[in-house]
Image (cartoon, rainbow, N blue to C red):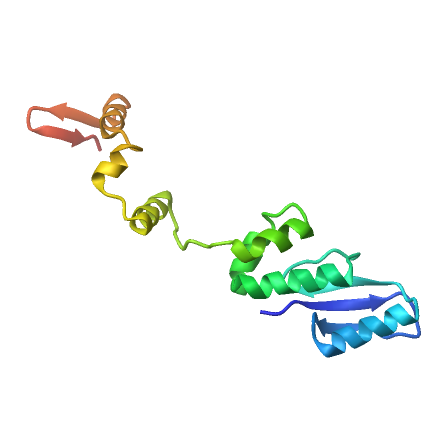
Amino acid sequence: MSLDVFIDPQNLNFKGGWFTVGTSSFLDYMNRLNEEKVEWRISDSIPVPVPEIISVQQLQALSDSIEESGLLEKELSAVYFLFDSIDECIEKLPNTIIINANSDEEFGEYIVDLNGLSREQLLQYFDYESYGRDMRINGNYIQTDVGFVRKT
């Protein structure tokens, strides 16, 4: 996935436009702006917001991180706001992993399967007895001589 930005030069002699960061047209345009000492800003960007004032080097590094991450646009939009700065995003985005789980239970099952944990290993982290006791004490279940019955 590419990073596209709308470059808005602060000089009437230059027309702004959309550019894909890292392409030859982007680099040529930025070189022209630099040679003419024209100030510019980013007024829009896709697929993630980019600060108005950012260096060409940061734009290129962000573009590289987006490409390296392999995230889909929807995933990228969801995780982009977890970072406190562009520099943090550039550093951490390529190592971001999305686990497709819609609940804590699905997430837990994924982690257990991923790590190949056995029941014995899980017992190190999960106290079944305490959990059962809490469920009973909280009034969700009643212990009978035939077993536990869930109150409805």
